[in-house]
Image 1 (tube, rainbow, N blue to C red):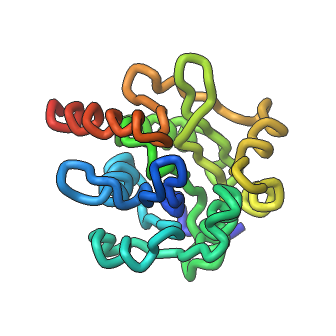
Image 2: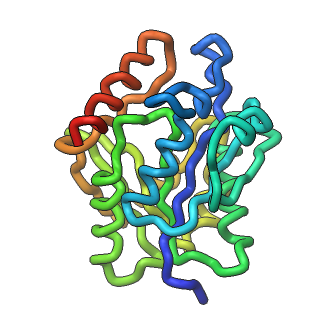
Image 3: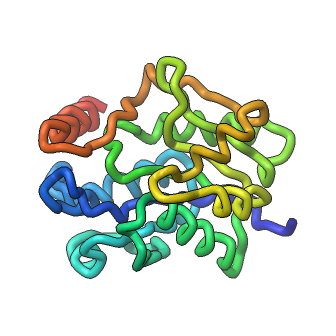
Amino acid sequence: METNGEVAGLLLAAGGGRRLGGRPKALLPFRGRPLVEHAVRTLRAGGCGPVHVVLGAAAAEVREAAELDGCVIVENPHWEGGMGSSLRAGLASLAGAASRPAATVIGLVDQPGVGAETVARVLAAARAGDDLVSGLVSAMYEGRRGHPVLIGASRWAGVACSAGEDRGARTYLREHAEQTVLVECGDVGDAADIDTPADLRLLAAAAQRATEC
């Protein structure tokens, strides 16, 4: 498979925040800006090249409010079907790029505690392997697999086929557990999701850590 050797970022940011009262997660405030901007910066600072951002809920509003210059914007009209549809849309965008990346690091917009150092660890583990194009690396937090996940280009079709509703790449990773490199990141990141109003405290905690850095 011919690739450009780069690792692209793939940010899944289509969620409508149903349990947040319908507040799109991409637009949640983080240090005075939409959260989606922070998630893009995290992927770039961690070593990813071009970043493909999958939008869904309030996509037009996100485009207007957030500065996403240099990103490839992918709109998923089926975002209400869950993460799986957004993952498929993002992988299709990557596969159809004029210059195909060797791999992608997949991040979630609603995990502000996952920082650039976590992305960099996952990327370093993949580059240390024999073949980036067939790479499969996942961050791990105190023994539990989480995001970000790096997936080599030769695996995108298989991941897309296995993704369904809210499963994302979970089924594929489970079926290929023996081939997945796990990287402990619990000392540098927090993989907690923002799903409910009570979880909004994670934004403040992540903002505080960013200020300290």
